[in-house]
Image 1 (tube, rainbow, N blue to C red):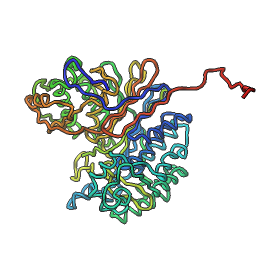
Image 2: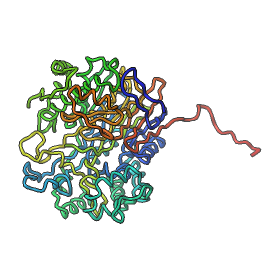
Image 3: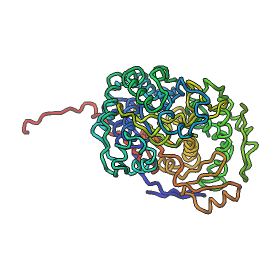
Image 4: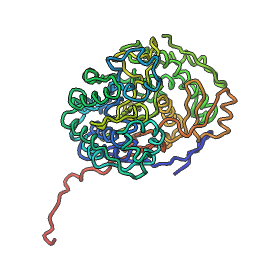
Amino acid sequence: MTTWRARAGTTFTPQKQSALGARGMVVTNHPAASAAGGQMLAEGGNAVDAAVAAILALTVCEPMMVGMFGGGLMHIAQPDGKHEVLDGMASCPLNARPEMYEGRDPRKQTLGALSVAAPANLLAWEAGLKRHGRFSMADVIAPAIRLAERGFEASTYLRECTREVAADLALDPTISRIFLPGGEPMAVGARIVNAALGESLRAVAAQGAAALHEGDLGTSASIDLARKGGIITTDDLAAVRMIRREAVRGTYRGVEVYGPPPPSAGGVHVLQMLNLLEAYDIAASGFGTPATLHLIAEALKMAFADRAVATADPAFLDVPVEKLISKEYAAERRAFLDAARAQAWSPGIRAMESANTTHITVADHEGRIACCTHTINSLFGAKIMLPESGLIPNNYMALFDPKPGTAQSVEPGKRVTTSMSPLILRKEGKPYAALGLPGGLRIFASTFQAVMNLVDHGMSLQEAVEAPRLWTMGGPVEMEGGFSEETRGAMEAMGHQTVSMPHVAGGMGAILWHEDGRMEGASCWRADGTPVAIGGGPAQEGVRFWPDIRN
């Protein structure tokens, strides 16, 4: 692979190769899921069919990251340039109360049945199919059923994720039976089979999302959760809704940037930070130089100061979106930025999130794009498996403030706030790039830097997704190992406290459109990501088979 060498700053060598195709592209964090999406495109489906098939396959082969009992966002762009976000974020149970975790073991909010919020992502996937797809739920779920019943090979990534939370998984006999055989994480290459999940997927194939939200699958799940001390009921599953939202839009150096609105913080604060830095010559400053990294860190601190007080479920808090994404507000905040010295940022607006998620980016040759981020929150969610259904529920309640009276306090029906940031970029109205990744609070910091990599630094797509990242929300600045000791030392001299990290956020998946009509897909070294391209096409018009009588 070619080493990235800027005029000034950090050099690095991408570890993976991108893929090119003119007929379609699927990028996910598991090869089997990318293949499932590619199969839909090859069979005549569009980007949304492929996206839902890929997500459902990930519920099986990336079980530590995503599942039907979780939440997420689908950012969909149509060939005519219209964007919408299907919000399938989870919400507090109807019996939840602001003080429900006070005086309890703090682990109850992060581990086990009481940490589970009401899921809505299956509703979003179904809505995406019905609004934009060509195939039925039964069509797109078939690859996931096959993976669950026939199994898939465990990767090193899955084994290491399992090892990280093995002590918690061991507390639940059902989940440990599959992922901790003999008390140890499964061997790399071992076949993972979840027959109960296969049956649940078959129920969804036959009944759609109603199987979970109105039918026997939901009843079984609520009973299993109640036995484990949870408060999710069939009323919760019936009441939760998918919400269609308008994407937020801004520009950065002439490039249109579309992202998700609240309750996601991703779109709003990416635009806020891009506006802040648009006044600086980032290209001249160079990639990975102390001067550029300082500006990124200060932009992040500013954004997180505002996020803490201003971004939440818009049904419960009046979020000043227009102000946050305005160029004028960026200019106000820029006046306080010291280009040579780190500082603490307080909110300009008056008024815990897990890194374990998954992301897919899909495009078809007709101009549809599906950029989707979904999760069960922490690694393996609540760290339990429901024995009858094989489902691994989320632990989304961990994201709420256990103290009453704050923007993020527990309230019945309140939606989770997220940093998910599935972005779609356009140039002169045409698709330019689409990207996203898992990573909790570190997500929108990473998409922000990827946009700069493409627009300011002129990186290739593979370079843009693999380039070293940094992150901060006001404390230490996390810097990946790709940055040198000299660079970290220069940051320290500017007043930043730095800490070296093996990685910041997770595996990014992205698509870039070339002027000749080809799509390029790329995934990075931080996960099992794989791009699958559809090339070729139909035979030239007029070509037909002429039988040869000599054969």
